[in-house]
Image 1 (cartoon, rainbow over the protein chains, first blue to last red):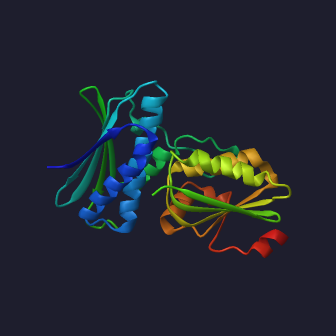
Image 2: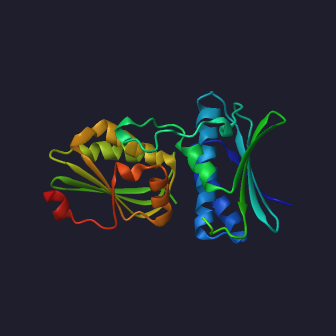
Image 3: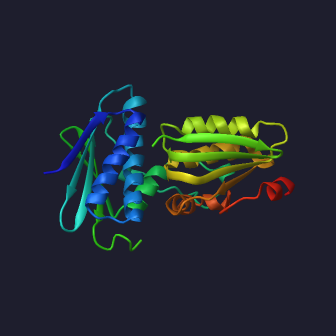
Amino acid sequence: MADTLQLPATLDALGPIRAFVDAAASAAGLDHKASYRLRLAVDEIATNVITHGYEEAGLRGDLELQAWRNGETLTIILEDDAVPFDPTTLAEPDDLGTPLEERAVGGLGVFLTVHGVDEFRYERVARRNRNIFVMHRQGADDG
Amino acid sequence: MALEISSTVHGSVAVIELSGELDAGVAQRLRDETVAMAGHDGVRTVVFDMSELTFMASAGLRVLVFAKQKLGQGVELVIAGAQPAVAETIELTGFHHSVDMVETYDLDALGNA
């Protein structure tokens, strides 16, 4: 059995989504740092889905979250039926050493996601986007 | 927790105190507030007091990029008191090269800088 959360895909959903992830991280015994990184990762991808996948495409729909826990890992699954998009295909920003005056503003969220979780995957299943975030329950504070 | 923004101007220094969580849903408010505060006559430094900020998404970073690009060289941005997790995001993305990060700030020292 997984814990689940389903709610309309608007930016107002971000707070409840973070609370859901925080509760799952606590239940899995993740330390503060790992919990924060997981919250940030799910928040960033959910933000992309809401703004690019739904709103900019003129679509409305839901976000559905699941939290799965086993002995080794905590897995958060985020599903939507917005525009198909695989964030793992985004190139890493190549201007992280550039002064802000010359920066482009895209790609930071996915960068933080990929660097923050132990594993990040995307699947396209039954016409839905599925973003998968995995954290190891042991050694979660190894950085 | 929602984002609370509280701003004050002390001579050439504007201080924007942030409390709560800064995500994409509320970033526009901070963007507007930053522009308004930096627009006060004679303001040369904008301090973001993040000591009570418990979460910051990349939308917060984009506010800083926007501010830096909009306000130009005439205004310095300072981030004060960022909690470790928020500071990690700022450093991971290289923003600490463009924004002064300090633990605490002294209005008199900033005003006279």
